[in-house]
Image (cartoon, rainbow, N blue to C red; front, side, top):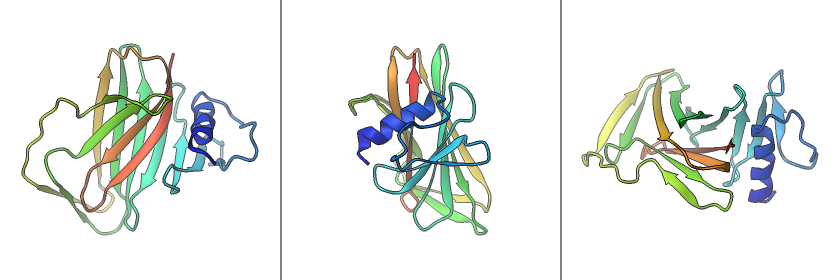
Amino acid sequence: MSRSRALGALAIAALGCVACSDRSSSLTRTGASGSALAYAGVDGQTQSLSLPARGEAAAQRTSAGTPISVNLRVTPGLDAVTFELIANNGGDIRHELRFANGQEVDFVVRDERGRDVWTWSDGRLFTQPMRTHLLEQHESRDYEVALQDPLLHGTFVAIARFRSENHPVTTQVVFTLP
């Protein structure tokens, strides 16, 4: 499936459509209520999209070969769009996370044409020394940022990057601003 077709199908799902009219799509419903969709991401790996509440969209992604998973939730509001990324160690052993500097995550918003319209880290300074963090079994780290006073309208893709050097994970979700 082409990237634009996949994003279009996800946009329909993110707007609250319960059933996709395109039965040839590789989107599949999961969960008892059909409130989650699984799809092949841009890189071919399976991602899932769930609709936790009206106006919100969320996606989950797991790092290849490890039980580190990330959940991205986007919540559009009147004065801000909130992005929440939760990194979770779902395994039974702790994992050491290595970061090249003080930046552990990044968030990017792209428009329908694929252009970056906002990057959280732009203009920010981060500590330079390499850092490590132990993520205990079944422990999570929560990161929340906001795009204040968004003057954007339309359908966008939020991309969240967990920047661990040894367990990097990227996930994305489609959302709409009226």
